[in-house]
Length: 195
Image: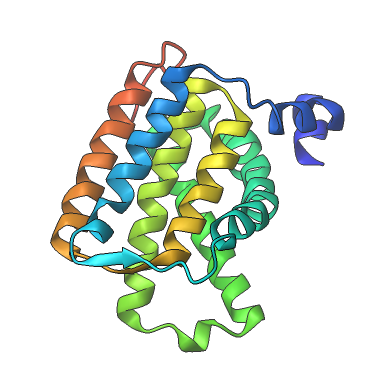
């Protein structure tokens, strides 16, 4: 495991951090704020389509395993290592680019890339950029792998259940999210510079 080799963090510590749900209410309020801004557009002209009552829970557990494991790599290891060499915004953009390549390679392997239109791919890339800033800001603020894994899982669930919505509200909220994420990271006393 890269984190173990580079930082000397044991697998036991990573697992403990992954499942450490006892976080402060302000941390969970930040998660709720980012999620609300991310998906308010669905409430205006769209809907969350839930055909079976337990679908959100099943999707959350699946997303927590797969999306959560991603967070061990991206926010727990990759981006902090980048931030030792480059400032926060550059590290977040580089993480986004690498994360995007990883996703599109996965979509190619599972065969879903062929179903993706230019519009869908563009929307996905913009959402991935915004959520790179969300997750990195949350990690900066909380230093919690659990918060990032849970938020990533919630983003995946809401994205899978969302149908329609007001695109103008979406883009406006994404701009607000980027500003909030950068401002939140600026308050991080360990961050000497953003650019």
